[in-house]
Length: 374
Image (cartoon, rainbow, N blue to C red; front, side):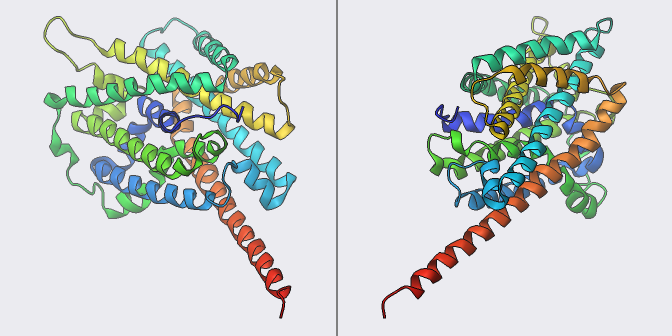
């Protein structure tokens, strides 16, 4: 599949799709709950930190052009390390698809289909995921490029349309419960930039590898802006009411939008748009899971594992018994999974790989000097 290259805009949309879909779910609620009125400052802070980390990632990847994190793991520790990292990221992608699918399906059940089984709703999403993956990775990425501007516009529209409902004083005091909560404890909100995980896998698919740094920085910056607009909307409306709700806080904000008597209840339109976006996000993450599995077992054409992964996702999604367990997994388990795998493990691997690369280059240089004629 690496012969199907993707352009800059497609790659940016790829990273953005993670952020916007978690924004629609409970991500803003989680951040507001942890930093209260200091949320705006916290988002600005973690966006700057995320940009610095992404810049570091790009510098570390420069010595390994057109290689993904699995290839770099193979360079660093051989096949055993490649297998270990591959299993880790495979589990990560399947876990994120499972919990996101269950969370969104549970939200739809609570709001629109209280008499329907959540399993039936998930099956409908899984059918869509399987169909899109049958069409191929390139088709998914192209479709996501078409959907993403609409999603971003919907978030901006919800923000602008709620101006009349804003109480800006709710952002005071600016540091919330203090500098420690906003800047130190609030650093854990970096998990909001989980889309960074795609940056470890997209280098082999880029048309122009020299644009990788630009793609990475722009996608993270746009993700930060998107997150800022979302949390600002919820914070300025009524943070206490938002944090009391179990699901879809941004959907609740869209319910307040009205333009006269003939343009009301636009929330249904926004929800349709966000459903399409969710399918794109789940399809992309599912596709990366299959690619990791393909690379680990060196499989090229067999597609039997798509059904296996679908069954696993459906089974794992049913494990949480209620919405409270789902929210706990989203807010606590998912947070630490992202911080450990996407940031700690992957960054450590890149640093060690660069150290090994530099040592090898120095040895080569010393050998050339020793063999130079006197």
